[in-house]
Length: 306
Ligand code: NAP
Image (tube, rainbow, N blue to C red; front, side, top):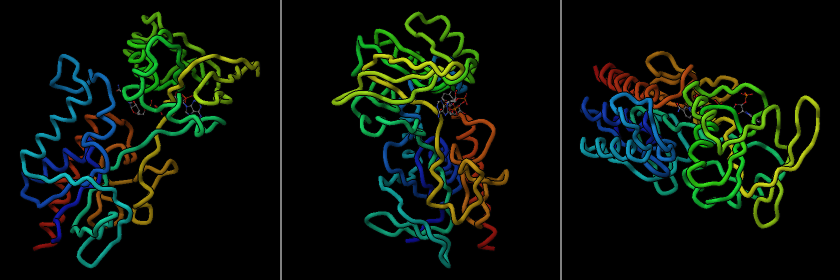
């Protein structure tokens, strides 16, 4: 069986593409390797998604999107795509168990956390080093932890952690934060968070688990040790574009370049959501990308038929 459209990635972009494809009567399949909702499932409270005047949790919003997709009859397959090839009919996607053929593909794989790249990080991953406060924050109840980064994720997750932990040290390499003003206001008002600015982490220390961080003040070069039992790293994201890198143009950060119809340089291959080069990565822009990509795929199929 050849699908009209295979959507790779079941985050907000992919799920929305599924909704629009179903309503356009395009025979679609969504492939997601983990949980439908993607990164959204590990967001605490969302205050900027229109229609939810009371903040909604990422898990709740994801499950509502998934329910909507399922109600419209789009199957969501739990699998990991390992390879994508162009074929005479369109595309062949290989998972561990099968090959799936599709006339069009929407690549909506999002992005994953960037590592900090310091000694101790890999060795202590899962033993005090985390990239997900929602998943792991609870284990640090009444303890002192650090969050590294100065963007929306770092500030939002530092705020979230204050519900459980005794204290959060927010470590940022500059003295100005790029996080959105409303989050910075909440940060200033939270007495459980101490900012450590102009400072980088040189090493994560510990044997069985994290015991502390070696820090360096960037202006003076002064070194210090900060005892913490956990460190949450939010220093940006890496787009999951490597499997299609030969079929698309990438910018220097690895984001997929599309036109405004979400088309890549390979006919029939579209990209949507955080994996795409764009000025604003938010749930609203991801869902908008998904809708546009699905309608572009539908038009592409229609034009090819005629
Ligand atoms: P980000 O905006 O790229 O911020 C990454 C932060 O990490 C920056 O402050 C950066 O410092 C710092 N950093 C990068 N490399 C570093 C290194 N090697 N060592 C130390 N610090 C380093 O990433 P993000 O916060 O994960 O956000 C990603 C996207 O999702 C953004 O578009 C963001 O707006 C969006 N987002 C939105 C929300 C929301 O609306 N509530 C929540 C989460 C994420 P510099 O500032 O010095 O570059």
